[in-house]
Image (tube, rainbow, N blue to C red):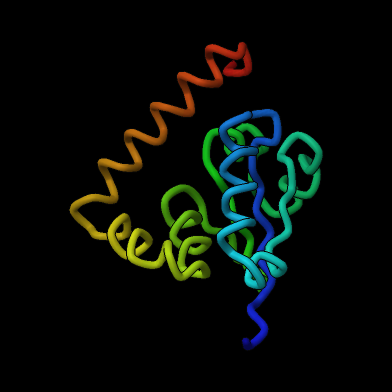
Length: 123
């Protein structure tokens, strides 16, 4: 298998669902998962600021940093991760469709805001 470029995933490490999703991804990714570094947003706030990302925005939406420093966010970040896992490639293609992407983004944003509000972490 050729070496994949390193990805840094900034995720909400406090969120139980996010931690479960991370564990599932690592299982499914196999060798490709070794090229993904998971960074808890609450522990990497300064790093995020240095990259021009507000830590609160990183809590509200998944951020993935590619090896060259480019950061993808939200559904695009999920697509980038999913494309590395054979069983998730069809889903990555599906959620990237122009007709679905805006609706999925709206649902995702709403779910995250409700979760953070319920936890008392939404300003």
